[in-house]
Amino acid sequence: MFFAFCDFSKKIQFYPLTKVYFFGKIVGISGEKWRIDFYKGVFMYFIGNDVYSVDHKGRVFIPAKFRAVLVKEDDASFYITRGFESSLLLFPLSKWDEFIERLTPGRYSQKRIRDAIRALSFGAEHLPMDSQGRVILPKELREFARIDEEVFFLGALDKVELWSPSVYEEYTKDKGDISDLFSMLDI
Image (cartoon, rainbow, N blue to C red; front, side, top):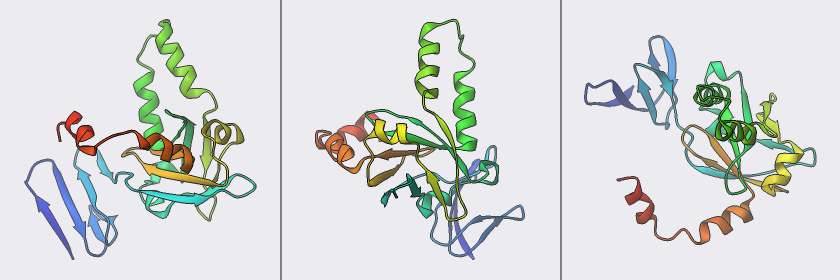
């Protein structure tokens, strides 16, 4: 059984209470909010945050709520690269492909395009998840983001940001009132 709130447009919001089926596939698990877009398929956003320990080998568990967002095409793997403000960006395989496709139409002969591609590909790595839901964070990227014993996961809709908890705390100190941020987005 599930509740569906629908305005009969191309998007439907489902709030499943148990398993929800869409054209014969399970698309929802109890307690999760799913977005079904009839033109693009099924996608659940990366939202929320969590802190996990990094072991001595650089392994970290991907939070279960973020693993649940992966689709079959992601092949239980991610791409990671340097992000902004000393963070790392973690993309599921399908979103990484979309991200790269947005970069490739640019003319490589343009210096700004080359600089952007170089910045994003420098240190980027493919991260397969092991059977326990862990990935190995590359040492160079951990050093860039100043991640030592713990990593702060922050869902950013179509990707996940990874931060050192202390760096993120420092970054958010001077952000001011959240209403200023929302007004910038016309919310």
